[in-house]
Amino acid sequence: MKIFLDTADLNEIRRAASANLIDGVTTNPSLLAKVAGDGDPKDLFLEICDSVDGPVSAEVVALTADEMVEEGRRLAGLHPNIVVKVPLTEDGLQACRRLRDHQIPVNVTLCFSTAQAVLAAKAGATYISPFVGRLDDAGHEGMDVVAEIRTAYDRYDMETQILAASLRHPRHVLEAVLIGVDCATLPPKVLHQLVKHPLTDAGLDAFLADWKASGQEL
Ligand code: E4P
Image (cartoon, rainbow, N blue to C red):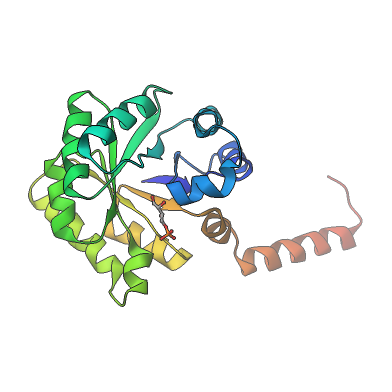
C-alpha cells in the first residue's frame, strides 16, 4: 500500500520523504493556495517533484472537458511524475478518458459514492479519491463507501487504484488499510500522529534513564 502526503508544504514533504515515509504527494487548489504566495505554482510543482520520488497529483481548475485536457496536458508536461487530478463531473470524466488516451495518469477526485467510482474506473482513471472525512462531516459513514468501492472494483477486475482521501485521524488510516485500499493520502498531522505512540515515548524514556543510571557507555 502506498502512502501519499496530502499537502503542498515543501518542508513537510522533504521531512517525510527524507525519512522514507511517503511514496508520493497529493495536492488540491486549496492546499496550493495556502503556500503558493506570489510564486508560480508550476515552480512549486517542480520543487515538489524534485523532493519526492513518486507520483505528485496536480489538480486542474478548469471546468470544461476541453480546458481540463489542455490544462492537464500542460501540468503533465512539467515532470514525468505528475498525475493530473480532475473532479468527478461529467466533464471531468470525459477529460479523464482523453488524458488517458494521451498516456497521462489521472487521479479522479471529489468522489463521494461507489457509483461515481465505477464511472471513473470505466473512464480509465489511474486513481480514484473517495473523500472519507467530508462524507463523515455530512453525516455518512465515509469508510463504507471505500469498502463498497473495493468490492465493486474487485468484482469487475477494475484496475483503478483506490486512493483513500480526506483522512482526518489515524483510525481512518487503519480502517482504510484493513479494507485493502491501494493508497492513502494523509495530511502531515496524521502522518506524525501515526508515527508517535505514548508507550513508545515512555518506553524510550525508561530505557535511557536505566542506561544513564548504570553509568556505562556504548
Ligand atoms: C485529496 O486529494 C484531498 O486533497 C484531501 O484529502 C481533502 O481532504 P480534506 O477533506 O481534509 O480537505
